[in-house]
Image 1 (cartoon, rainbow, N blue to C red):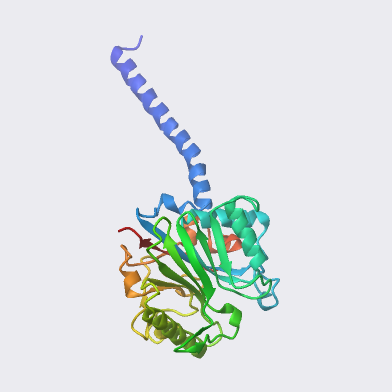
Image 2 (cartoon, one colour; image 1 turned 180 degrees about the horizontal axis):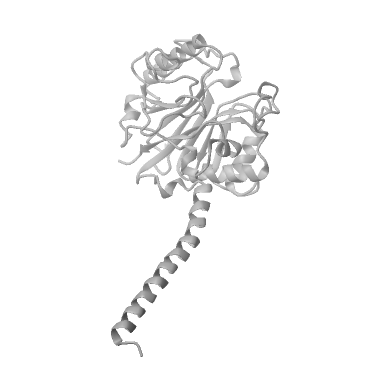
Length: 327
């Protein structure tokens, strides 16, 4: 007959074994849920939007939604996103918890409307997501702004084609002109800020130089107007880095009223390429950044390879800033 000491020790060992097995079982149960959360893009779990802040995102969605079917993009390794992939992309965009998203390469604007409807829960659903694009084109690359109207109120929307100081916008395609919208934080109509979405030219450095200087002049004209807000956010795929001499960076900052926002993590924003997706803010807007940096949401966050990420999302990563709108 075992002693009381042996019985106690055996009981303790049994409890330890059972506890370890219970922990293993719990991990097996929890891990798939964590993976699902990451796959759906619940960025708020790891990077919550601070109180009294709005999140702004810029994201080039890679020939949306005409990868390898558009005559200019036949070499793309991926085709247009399937309905299942579009649903997954919609969840990921929602998971960014953004108030406003600056989008580039909107080749098929009806497909963009479809993406918005998926984010809203269906075509007939009265969801919060709204979008502004230049036309209903199905072939031309455009800039667009997507916003959550429970977080911001649209004051007016338009496109920047010309400015008194610089004339017409310099681009090989006029329909890629900057999209520009005036917003107010929801519930605070007196506070206004302007968001400008752009896509730098892919052709030549000289073209990007002209674009940068035009944008600097355009924003200078806005700042001279007493009816315009001092808070201006420029966001997009610049097709150029912030390295000295690179364009449109040098042009944008040439007037001394726009400031580049550096990245706080690994800052290459395009798969196989450099950091070309960026934010520039006026001084009044820059003062509203509690954290004076932007953040690149890379494929690693979703536990995916770059190839897997690109299949659903893009060859670019989304970049965000958190913007203070409190008193």
